[in-house]
Image 1 (cartoon, rainbow, N blue to C red):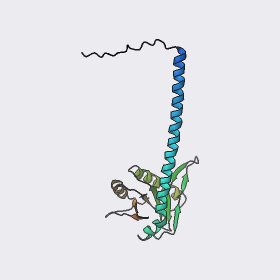
Image 2: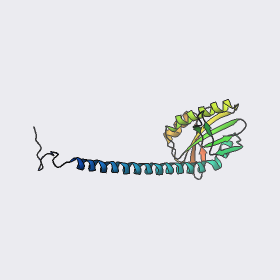
Image 3: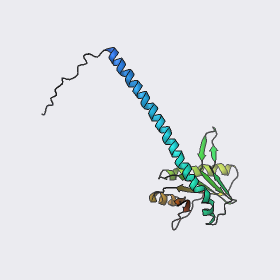
Image 4: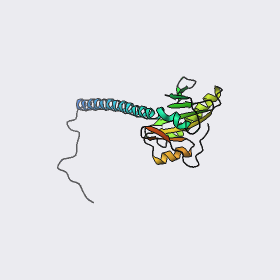
Length: 189
């Protein structure tokens, strides 16, 4: 069996007094509070940065998106940037859209992400279900479709969105394009 030797004897606790331990715990407490403050500040900054990316992506989508869908035969006469907030019974937001396109037959709810990921797909589908229930309860029977827009859109996520029946909207220069794969069938909600 190997033994480890050191030049120092093991600590015995000699010289530690209640006052020293108390002072050390107070310093540790102060350091933890400072760390918590820094983490909170960084979290806020990251959230602000994330929101700015979202705003940038929305500004890329809004100017031409109705035109892109109109090229597919939709003829949208209303584009609502900022979308719509749906409130639950407790007045908390239960669903919020980024952009809504509307005409007399269709509503398309567009979720805008700087870089969509796989989790965004079921989240948007859930949101679309909430919107469908809300509008049905209000007597609105227009067909509801969904789309996800991304400034940076990973190919696997784009394919998964299309497979789920959501229109994938991809940045192309200073505008957006709808990348509809062969056999694509939009899902109605």
